[in-house]
Image (cartoon, rainbow, N blue to C red; front, side, top):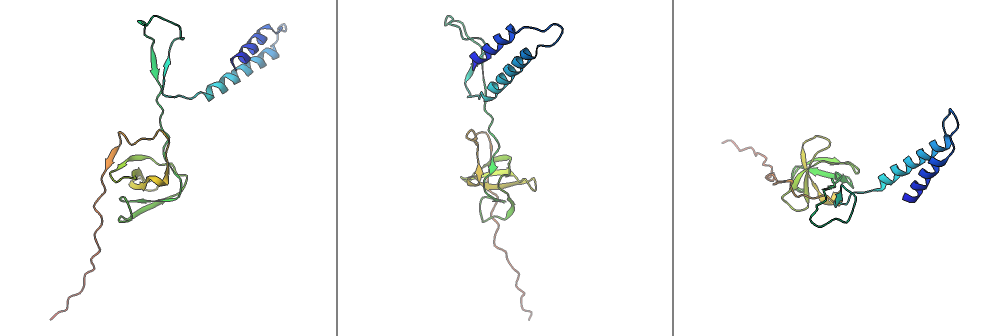
Length: 167
């Protein structure tokens, strides 16, 4: 790829100029080189490794080279199949809403019950619990550093008052 860019650059510099006008061939070469560089830059991905700020030159070991780290930011989770969002982890809790497949969600924290995340409900903008198995997670996604939510108390059985007979 680099040799192609170099060849195009050399070719563009050696093309004859037309007096008083623009050199269409040179312009095309410059545009092609620019497009190739843009395409090459778009294919580069960060790997979370140090990247030297100076050219790699053999130097004595006492000389340090400056470097920086590229940190990958995970993509937000996406609901993979239409799922229910609960007020707590599981069917013992009321359903707050359903979330359609393909919806991107904001994770607020990890549930203390394994297999559950607490997200911002995309419909009502409050928090709700969703099973991790219903989400597509970025490979770099981690719950480290997230707030851990404990489930609220489970709703008790409904007590229906029974009329008492009057004497």
